[in-house]
Image 1 (cartoon, helix red, strand yellow):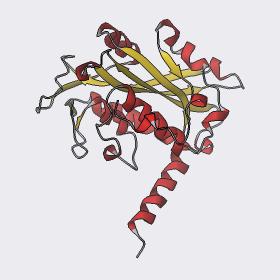
Image 2: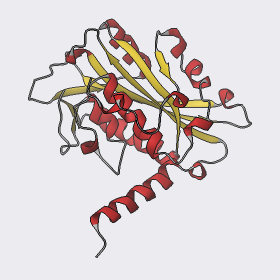
Image 3: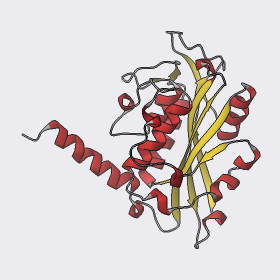
Image 4: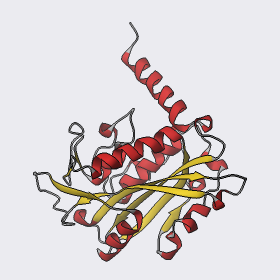
Amino acid sequence: MIAPTRLRSAALAAFLLAGFSASSARAGEHYFVLIFGSQSSPKVLSRTHTWATFVKAVGEGPDLSTYALEVNTISWLPASLDVRVWNPRPEKGVNFELRQTLNYVYSEGESVTMWGPFVIGKPIYERSVRVRQVAESGAAQYRAISNSYDMLISDCIHAVAAVDPVLGRSHYPLIRIGKPASRYIARQIMTRSLFDQYQYDNSWLIARLGLCRYPIQVVAPRAIPKRGCVLCKLPD
């Protein structure tokens, strides 16, 4: 009998090979993700948010900045935009696009940090599209503090974590809220990706997505340690 830990490791390896391998994308297709976190100062739980934007770039030639972009954002919020942290009842949710999200969090007095852009594989991008489709189907609901079991009730962090089909939402406990939660997701990409993120400069995406118009703190992959990041473990 194969030990559960070995089965888990094998499943993780298979996922990484499928999801992060460069060979999973055709020559004219490239895939990326940008991880965002926001919070007020001083930090108030109801004024924090985590979201992610997944990008498919399609074109020809070596200059990816000329490629056509397909943008898919998972930014799960209550439809009322009133984040009631301790409300035990799920409510109607809404999935915002990237610019909608930025305009919303800035209107709430929050600052924004972005980690990436990171290179990902086609299966991860396609899974993000399916997660967004479920969120926008009307079947999913929002709750500011969700659990790891009911996939149709999510907070903003677990909505993004749903893209991870191996470790699942239980790997993203809500001891981290706002920017620390987003930073932790970015660290997962750095430590689990088969791409060497240090070798890529995808900063052209920042301008293409119009992010230069906003006062976003950008943390490039080259500035993120793969291991030994004490701050990434703290729920600050």
